[in-house]
Image (cartoon, rainbow, N blue to C red):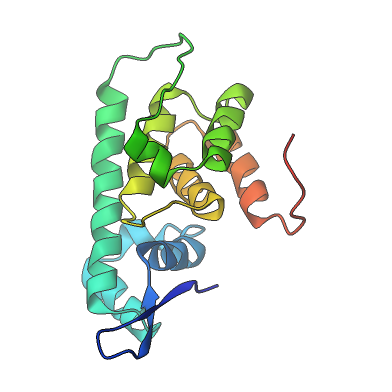
Amino acid sequence: MRIYLRYRNQIGQIVLKENTLDILMHLFENYMDDEQLAIQDQSSIKTDLHEAGFSTTGIQKALDWLADLANDQAKLTQAPNSENPSIRVYSAYENQRLDGQCQGFLIFLENLGVLNAATRELVITRSFALEEDEVSLEQLKWVTLMVLFNQPGQEANFTWMEDLVYETDNSTIH
């Protein structure tokens, strides 16, 4: 599934713009089951992505996003583990990027125990790293799935989130 944003360039032509999440989703869907992503070198991954039709700039942004996720993950595992519940207050800038539906979804995931305060912050950070003006609920779900995939000991939460992301019934979460 490719999601493209349409915009008009300076000449007035309509141009399709791929976003970083498109490439990340492609990598996730094509490499997650067999751990090929960890085994293959970046040049062969770049070649595969070029053959799939992605741009060099987009590919590099996606690979940088993954590298930053790994770095953020390393910092998270070194941080002291706090079991105390926390309340997240969003800044004006964050409220612009994450609407009430996205914020409510994060609270929902925390209340279920799928995310804790530290992983919530990692999801928010990685969502903002997509460099979109606003993060949609669909994008937030995918970022959450990718963050959980990279979290050791989160297999059950990852599986639950994977079911939610791939769910074809778009029913409302209560």
